[in-house]
Image (cartoon, rainbow, N blue to C red; front, side, top):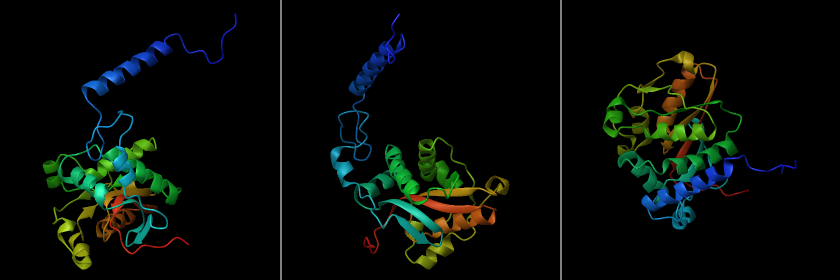
Length: 241
């Protein structure tokens, strides 16, 4: 008996049809909204509205890879416009919808500029006090979404042992560096030792926080540390060669 090579399994077509019906009903009951601005979008498979997708301030070459006291950091977006609003909403208003979008751009930046330099993912932690107040760690959410893209799992390697003032409340670079001295520790050095880490944070400005965390990982025996952030402020632009 002749059988088409690409013929679907007996129950495949009804299942696909049911999935489409379920998606349609879900979109009807809970209209899909843009992950950044909350405007209605055509489908739940389209996470951004056209305005937000067009206006997202993506960093372009050669301004993606940053260098600082932390080493190297792939920065996906400029910390401005709807990217800034999305990150502030995530940090202070409980808006988690932007996480997959931010992670997608971060994954692209890391893959293009840090490929082959890390084999494990970790994150900059918040203090226990802030975690209790906020209910989540925004950098861990980003690290988790990144790890999912790469079919792996983020690892909690660092602990913040003092609830210091927010870095955003300090202006001078020397104040920011002093503010994070002795704030982080690696409670389980055996977990860190010998592995090459991608250290994830939401925003990088002076890099003092990333530097403190990266240094803690290196002192705990990390074989290497590179970093990735969702956004960084626009500074003096490097021009393409």
